[in-house]
Image (tube, rainbow, N blue to C red; front, side, top):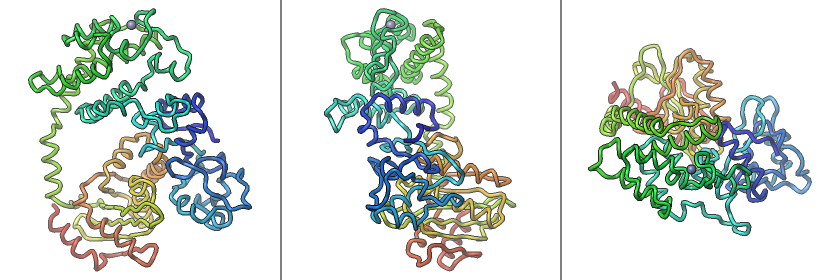
Length: 479
Ligand SMILES: [Zn+2]
């Protein structure tokens, strides 16, 4: 098995904890090896196919299972060697291997968490499931499965993703309190760092510790139920959701409790790891500042303006790039399983005229995001190969645009993003933007056409007949 390597420090640490403490066979069902150079992964013994759960491919009888995956890859091209697939692997697994995108540079094999869409080792899917399951329980339930209303309430909250994720960790007993860590056989001091002689449970840390009580009280929140040791933590969270939903309460009070929990946790970590104590009032003030800053920002981009912007964008249609800059729209028509997927891209100038466009067929990926990235990489390479150096790339998948621009750690897209970031360097001026589907129809038509086309790919140096209407429509509706 290769070294554990993910791009998120926390995620990686957690993955390691699970890796070394839980039953190996249970883990192997959830961890998928992300093939880089294939040097550390054995072809028949390690789980590296993009299936859930991940598994090794079925080999032909003469294949040595200890052979490394490297043997299937062309070293310089970094592509799958079809001849080797034919001679070593059972035919029914070939298409699964072709779904795996290989990085262009030499990168070690790493791991991703196969149950999640982005491959992040997230608490939503839960390492809890891997570690806290009863020994004989093959189908464990994450804690939130017993209180689906809490899960739903958390995802519905209009707060920052950071806080949602944090609340999820609290609710699913995945946050690193002494109690949770010790349940995973990690030998840490079991006591609360404020009180020193009371066990550090979630409920204690956030609600019943005298320190927490003083914070809730100083913040002017109802402590009767919140700090009652006989009320379950689930009911306390429900209470906070109720406060959050109450339109009669002012906005900052509705959101403050979540920031208080966040600050209580930060303060706790400061005390445990840095031996630095934070006073009650400091915690309350920080939480109040966090809430205010967040509300101010949220108001600026409040929902009504955003909805108006989206409606406007939809009505506006495709827009022309500024003079001197090209716009490249790309899209994918994604099919999973063994069917081919199609991709399309189209480059237009500031008058809306088509300069180049193309389409291609490829083996469908596991997720739409992977397929979108495949299409963007093709578009980047084509644009660069055709000599364009100042290009706006527009696609209709918000997730990948965020992943590219915010450089988010996304293990499943790791090799794709690295490739996109590497190609980005070659352009003088380049941007990646999200536009609603209505503004991306030409690329969509090309991607769909690619699938029905007899050739594997096509390149047009002017507008092909079947795009006339859509291109004219874009010019007419655009600005
Ligand atoms: Zn305490």
